[in-house]
Length: 91
Image (cartoon, rainbow, N blue to C red; front, side):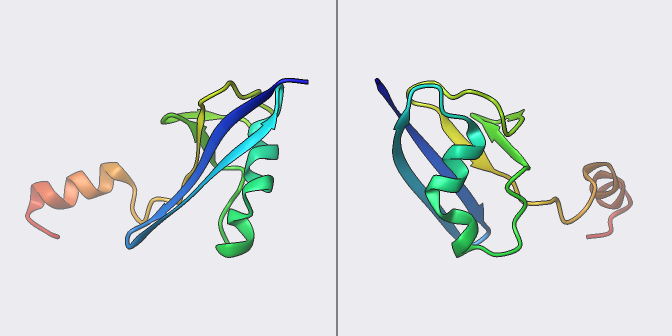
């Protein structure tokens, strides 16, 4: 069976945890996240909030060779609210 190479990443304001993996062809995003071990190193993250190259995907999305799976953090503030505050001069 052929293998694919994927990278799984999780970024925090102060660090980046990136793992390169070789998985069987047809592997899903959820399988890549699990195989990376990132969830064990960063308790409390939501492994279901993921994307591939900046586009949200489901955990069952099949990966292709060279894909970059990104685990997203929740936003600290709604982007619309942040713009409103900046427009009013609040930071």
